[in-house]
Length: 303
Image (cartoon, rainbow, N blue to C red):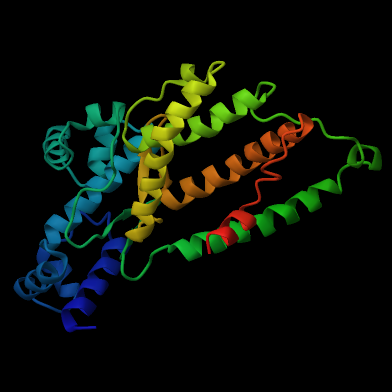
């Protein structure tokens, strides 16, 4: 690393430790790096593409946006936490960064991160992320999903010890979600799950009524749009090593913050269960062309 890069890494670490220290002056923060304010500003700007004070204000605004999504705290309290002496000053700064006032953004939140040359952003719940040093790759996501599989299987075995033999050996009749499922409803939800997340990533509403006894024609038409769109999102975040980046799902009540990697793992997990139920139902009707729909066979055929 160069001296400037080392100084920037130290600056980020100190910023995390003292993000709420609003009383320290720029000179005091530079002194903590063992530089004058002039030299510290020049080095941080050269690496981050923005001066230290602007960098810090942006991070505080990103944290404020996260607080607006994940808490019911009054905007004035969030403004004070972000270091603003008045609601008006906070509103002006937030509107400059996000394009809309905080009250408007809270009602319909968008992306948490404000564009920045360094790519360093507030990383929930309370830190910063240096992209070059801390990222989730596609291989790591796959490993995490296997780790989750091993953990969850272990937890299921542990909880099974609470049941009597009669309960353990009782035949399972299980449906997904709250209603009894059909092949039609499961296929509609498989397409709809991708459509729902496409809508969340585009910060637009999702029309749930389309899944009410959906026709096969509608399923084909929706899949032709939602499938490639969802796949393009996945390819984009994987190619850019952004699996650990966060986004706001405004479709939730209240809105929630997820990582792209977590969302992809969620889709694959619940889709796998629904696909298996469809494959079993097909077999009951004598339709066995897909077997279990095993991804191992599909991946091998494309190797």
